[in-house]
Image 1 (cartoon, rainbow, N blue to C red):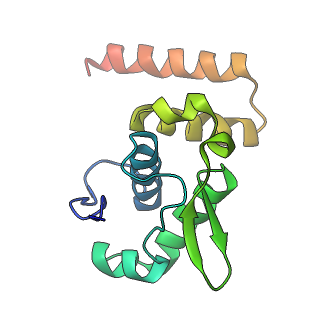
Image 2 (image 1 turned 90 degrees about the horizontal axis):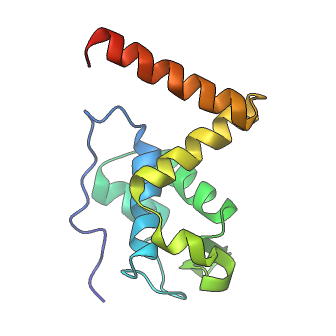
Length: 134
């Protein structure tokens, strides 16, 4: 199997943390069918080396993907793409931007914000950007 991550490059100018870029790319590749259920992912160490990033950065991305049900780690065997039923049908079509929004919503919820607070904050930020002419 070709490595779907072979052409992936970290964008250091994007403003997104590297671990989120890695996580979003893998989730996108799973949703797009580039990785199928049961496919083995690169090891944390090998992906870190190929992307020239920290082992801990890749590990954080993998831990988040596992927590969300995209992948599963089997001690001594490796990390594998989870079965579709574990991922959920709606997740298969998520774009990288939607995944980023999901991360933002989780972070806001973790900070004690409810849906209305999040919507109000996003509207305020958009108004501020419009005011600044961005």
